[in-house]
Image (cartoon, rainbow over all chains, first blue to last red; front, side, top):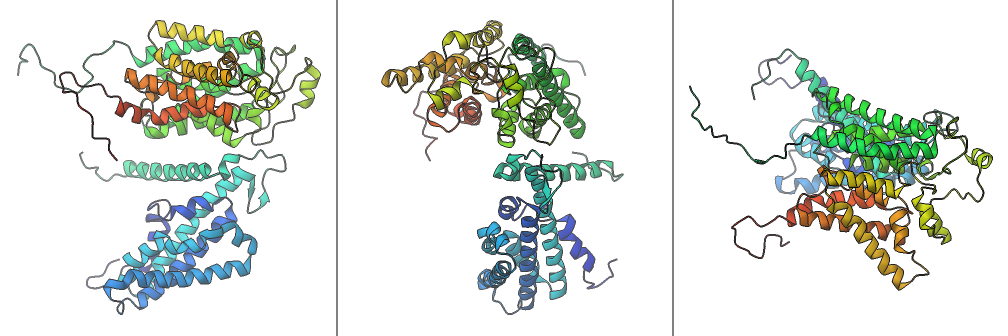
Length: 215
Length: 354
């Protein structure tokens, strides 16, 4: 609970913000390019989510550490250089761990650099907060992004191939829904999730006993 | 406070009403679709009856579900979901597994209608959205055809109809060879023309002998039903006229240029789903232009694109995508074909410059 004075906001709150209340995929609808393009399977989606989370957390830490040194005029360029550094790390890391995955994700690993979620967090949060809250917040956001991607990827893999993490769920006679692994499938599944969440939120609002404003 | 008489009512257009309700129009369209459904059941048997019922039920259930979700009063009674279901079923192959039909019905109402805000707000024809979805999802099943007038069609189902949900439908090869009718190729007239360069005869097409989707076999019956609707002014006769006219004209031109390569015009008209699409799908009032000039353009676009896809595209049939494209163009067409406001000066509209 908030104490009077300069009490920092609860760390848990910072963490949960990205995980749920401001989920990058389902609430802020950021980083749609990888969210739609690489979520053909659960593994790809999870790998992409974790890679993004790693870059997000690392760059948040660094941006937060140097936040007082960077002149305002060149801050965006600085953030981009920092982010690009970590993306390069992830790029080589994934290539070293699994070449197959590396090829499946393709250019989208390098494109993490331009993921608006990461630059947005650096600009809006990390550059204004000390390292601990910045990292906590980034961790929540990164995990929220990974969960969002996983939610897309698992549904698409189940319908598109009858598998989850490559394990067949329905046996060899499964009829794949080809559309689900095509680009339209990404939009359909994302739309379905968005619909589900916004419907759920609107139900919660109407059911809560709080007075609803006239209008 | 007493009302001054005469009372002046202030409200936005429309001020002149036709006195017709949506429900009345929709009911008549359903009525006009019933003979086509009946004919297709007679042709393909029990499986088609089950397919039509399943798809329509799925559409109605989805409509009901979204009513419940949005907390709006029920819109089942306006018959529009019924029309979507019937039309969608008529565009599917007779051997289409029922569970896939249900998926198509759900996609039609959910993606094609409910997400846009319901009847009248949809950009695309819901039935065609449903069909496009299953075409992309189950490309094999939607291009598997069975012969018409199979002897035992009223006593048994086509084996694929009751395919286990989510599983591959059983192979039809044995069933077809048991029941066959010599020289059955398993291809629609359009596919036979495209890949084997065989043009089906007009009498064969007119009699509904062709292997085709459920409801696209009898051009005459569809035209008769469309005529009923057009005479009663439930549909705009210009749209089918423009679609069929432009397709015929284009086909005629191609045929005259190279008769060996391109089929005679009657073939374009009678094969595939062109007539069904032109009469019942392109005429959907929510997704077609409102201005008379716009309607002609819209119809011509659909007819032209259909022929182009059939002649030069990778697909054998192009009616569905042509109509969806026409739907997408509708707002643009409407914008550029606004009639001059009465009394306004005639001028070259400069507003559209890019």
